[in-house]
Image 1 (tube, one colour):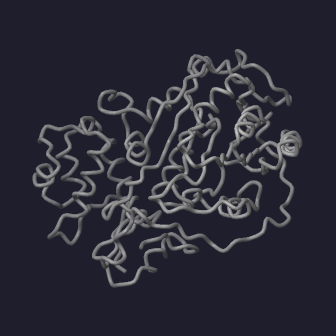
Image 2 (cartoon, rainbow, N blue to C red):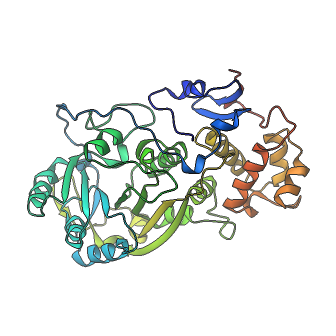
Image 3 (cartoon, rainbow, N blue to C red):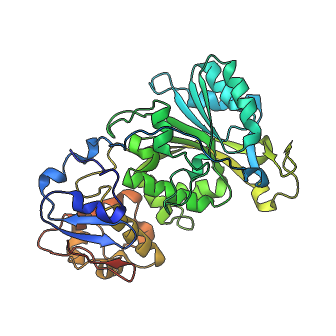
Length: 397
């Protein structure tokens, strides 16, 4: 059974696998393997994340939250909170643990707990902490309040985490949240409003976490339930039928997760917390483009069958690279991209995936791209499966 090697830097992770083999490595992270013994590459769909040793929270340096100087939106409408709870509450789903991102005044928090859920409130603004803690005391211990920002946990740049001593691993272990194998159920559900600032970077960061099984995805198939602006939602759900919005980001999210649109709500239903320290209705100072959009409540559930013998948390970077290269010339034919991406016979690949020579990148559905990648990966008779550009290098270990 395969599991991520804990505690090693990205470049050293590959050397932890037993057996001689030739590896191709991306400059920024481990990419893929060749000739790895079968015992190290099977059972990927049922791996169990391995965690680092537990630590205590300890005394953390004081940190003045900068979030109050960002116009964060908060759900304060009790009717909307009840609607969200009704959507989230599935009697057939055994998971009733919710991690709420920046709950603010706690309207949704209270509605979830009153329905019978356990809620872990991750609030990045100290202003709301006393109120949330007071709310927790009145709700029979079903609420844990932690001062941190969910969307800034475990930065991939390995920079400072704010508050400094909180990471997802440390947080989950101290809260008693246990990891589940990928093929099992959902260990917990995340609910909140997706940040408008650096939103695209956050989407890419979450994708890397899913495919590499790091950060919150060390614990299994964590489900995301987020309010996100309408434009980004359309991109996540785009396909060849909406070619103008279709991009690598669309493919990667749809390959990784089942993407469901659950509810649509206008921006006016959410209050913002301003620099003056007050909850206010959005005014004209909000961008007109943003105000015209709705917020879409979407569910992102990682797929049980995401990982196979040919798409793994070790070689996922090559899949990312393939998609980025393809969508750089989105109107080109697939066969033209294949000739620049791989030395494998392009016509043979097209035949195996049942695509025509005239097929364009924007004619390919997400499942087609995954099939394409896996077909190249399992091609026999080639010592090298991929051609690398300036962003990639071939390293023999």
